[in-house]
Image (cartoon, rainbow over all chains, first blue to last red):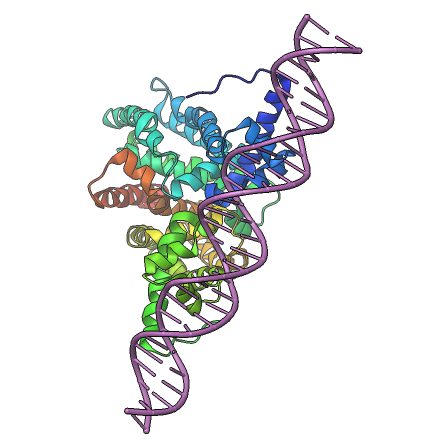
Amino acid sequence: MADDPPRTRIQQKNRAAILDAALDVFSQHGFRGATLDQIAGAAGLSKPNVLYYFPSKEAIHEALVHGLIDIWVQPLHDLDPSGDPVEEILAYVGRKLDMSRQMPRESRLFANEIVQGAPRFGAEITGRFKDLVDEKAAVIRGWAEAGRINPLDPYHLIFSIWATTQHYADFDVQVRGILAPVGDAHFDDAARFLAALYRAALTPPGVR
Amino acid sequence: MADDPPRTRIQQKNRAAILDAALDVFSQHGFRGATLDQIAGAAGLSKPNVLYYFPSKEAIHEALVHGLIDIWVQPLHDLDPSGDPVEEILAYVGRKLDMSRQMPRESRLFANEIVQGAPRFGAEITGRFKDLVDEKAAVIRGWAEAGRINPLDPYHLIFSIWATTQHYADFDVQVRGILAPVGDAHFDDAARFLAALYRAALTPPGVR
DNA sequence: GGTTTTTTATACCAAATGGTTGAAAGAGAT
DNA sequence: ATCTCTTTCAACCATTTGGTATAAAAAACC
């Protein structure tokens, strides 16, 4: 199911160019809205040449998603059960927000997929994805039961972190339409806001 | 620019059927991914008949968005500057979450638009939309300066409320994939979680 | 250089898609 | 019943789109 690494330099370069172009196009138009001509154009290749490297449009999309999922869940994966609870969760929020800042196209690629019902992605959600969330939710629940953070539903806490951080990538045009920021500056404000929000909500009374 | 109300009963019924069908299809596939045949099929009409009521696919989408935008911003509009700050904001969160529960298709319609860069919607964001947000952000800032809520950036607070509440509509498949809820039950948990989150973050030290 | 393999793109195809035509069926008014 | 206006849809059209066929150009190998 996984592709072997490309043999030649040309293959490596062109596959990468196609995947990068496809990330642009798929993240902006969704799977059905994207066309092979757009992808080929953005990659600087002809359409048949694109289909020389990937058997179909679907295959390009799958290769993209497949190659990104590990990176995508890494921030949650890195949540350390042995760390300080509040700081660990705040650090997780920070990592997720950084991803929205550095990889907005990737975020929108997943957003497009999931908003439209994850027709090409559903299996991953109930698979590895769910397992990781279950594992980390258990960690957070443990912290809550030990009184080290306020007792909040860990699943909805994780959802809220996904929502608030990915919002800055997925709804970028809306955020920019309202804030009219210069460049990326508003991400720093967002980081401060989210840190304050979650610190206030998580810090238990005793420590305050 | 606004359409006059349809004259005959048939017009009223069919226009409504088309818009309802279009809401289904557009919210699930995005504008470019949706086809007139799908819409016609879902509305129980032939494609030419659909185009008898609306001049184009674009016009259907515009009529939909146009007809929904007022409903969509109503919850924020109803934030009462003379009410109790914390309770007002919590009530706003509650109204937004209710909309995600009752109108998930509408939420996904907007989500699709905005994720893809709002090509058919951009003007609204920097127009009426921004004005309303500016107005309510000023109210919230006033509350913060008066020490009636914790000092949080009002714009990012509003973004976080949009993100956390709309998440349950826009990312419904993901939420369901992870929680495997029975029906709508998880919305009650979400309501409790969000109330706790924002109450903890907003309530100023003095009142605690 | 010559041979083989890989890479590239023009020309093409079938299906899908947004939209039109035109004529028949239906509703409403008198 | 008849006349008029509205509604409906089969057939059609032009364009777009995912994907092929094929043959030339370019690397790679000897």
